Image (cartoon, rainbow, N blue to C red; front, top):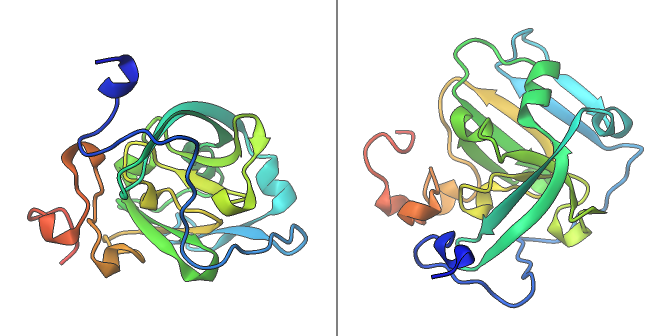
Amino acid sequence: MNVEESRLPPGQYVPRGRPVIHYGRVPQFKPESWDFRVFGATASGETHAFTWPEFEKLPRTSVIADFHCVTKFSIMGNEWNGVSPQAILEAAPPAEGVRHVMIWAEYGYSANVRMGDFLAPGTLFALELDDKPISAERGHPVRVIVPHLYAWKSVKWVRAIEYLLEDRRGFWEDRGYHNVADPWREQRYSYQEEPGEGPP
């Protein structure tokens, strides 16, 4: 077994190239009207909003991470550059007791993640892939990357995060996908959930 194979979760394979899968049409990016909002249980009780120039100026970092799609392909060793969740939490702090985050995208698409997953070392609001701006079909201008979970949690075309005091299912979780989405445990579907892995 080589190093790449040792990083493959069960049931996954490495395809040729980089497949692209998305639901619905690709939104058009309009930098003059684009904003990124942080709302819900914020420390101030107010919604925070960042224009595109303000978001671009947030501190940047890079991660190299694998990418595991629930449809069973994995793309290995991607280099992402963008804004860390910690930078956003510092600019728009959550209230005490926030344990979950809902990530919102264009067209009302969403995915929920636990705060521990949101703040994991590889999680990133990515603006670039391999030193180039992310392409439109891959989530331009901003895509969340949560590499240790199945890729439906890595939301494309991100526009907001909502701080949650209680967990709530996102778009795909409402449609039968697992609330946690750990590829190493093959947590693909909600019927696999153990007690405590999803909201009531």
